[in-house]
Amino acid sequence: MNTTETYRIDWEGIALSVRWTPQWLGIDLDGHQVAHLELLSDDRMPLPVTETGYRSHFTSREAVETEGGPVAYARKWLDCEAMSDAWKVCEAATRQMSLF
Image 1 (cartoon, rainbow, N blue to C red):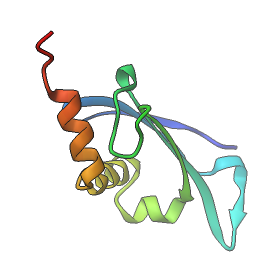
Image 2 (image 1 turned 180 degrees about the vertical axis):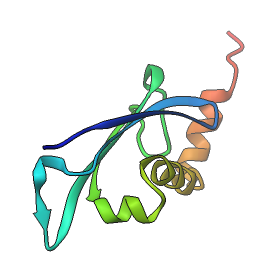
Image 3 (image 1 turned 180 degrees about the horizontal axis):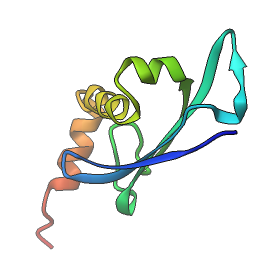
């Protein structure tokens, strides 16, 4: 039975949901439980891991647990990707006020 947990977080002023299914379809791959992590920002605001505000990510349950759980994993992933030049450009464009 796969159970999905949903968490609400705020990352850098962007509200989003973190959905975590630790046993996705009960699939075990090479001794590792296949898990599913989803990020969905309110109003589909861009995130460092997605321009659309939605990201589906398959990983191992162990990888997420090692980072401290789904919220800690999501925050670390966002923080890491936020250092990219592409995100810095996107963030500047999003936060810049329009004069017209």
